[in-house]
Length: 133
Image (cartoon, rainbow, N blue to C red; front, side, top):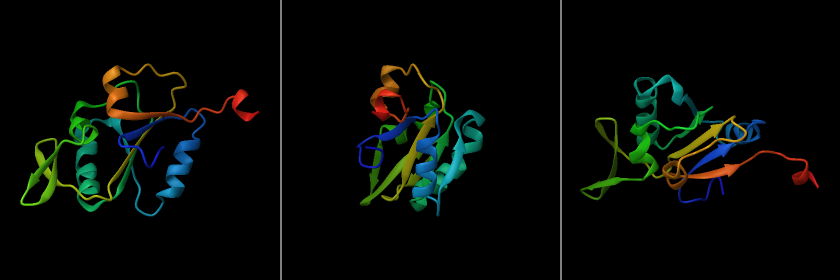
């Protein structure tokens, strides 16, 4: 589900198992960003990753996502001359089909809005005693 869903994964991951798996899977080119640092910090590295098809991991997200990510989350592509672009901030960025985006949260029981639930694929990586049986 994490890699094949039609929406970008938002992993509930209090034990950091998803983070470890993503880092191992994408170890070569993974760019790790922190959404809590603000758009002025993460937009340029995100644009680079989208343009060159590199994976991005936003670690430790809270219960809200930055609205500047909406065009990526909603996959609002712009077609020009047979090429795909996506608006990131003020810029139209070439969209490389190899681009991957992951979100993880350490929150054990986050309360996401219906909008976030509709824009992402929420996957619960929490290990429970019942799950071990």
